[in-house]
Length: 62
Ligand SMILES: [Zn+2]
Image 1 (tube, helix red, strand yellow):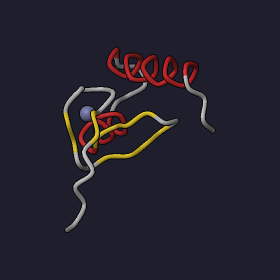
Image 2 (cartoon, protein in one colour):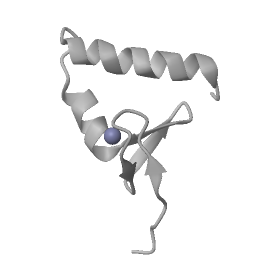
Image 3 (cartoon, protein in one colour):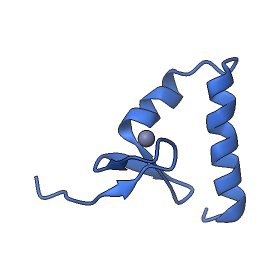
């Protein structure tokens, strides 16, 4: 489809072609789905939140 942009996902560290940029932090489609599906009471949710928080502090772009 002409979309050959490859980014390194900041969560799973895989090279991906589909994903979103959040606070300048690339999240692949699969990780985005996991975050959306994660219950805030889960330990993995805290993992994602802290990932995003640390990125947000180091490169605040919004
Ligand atoms: Zn990912």
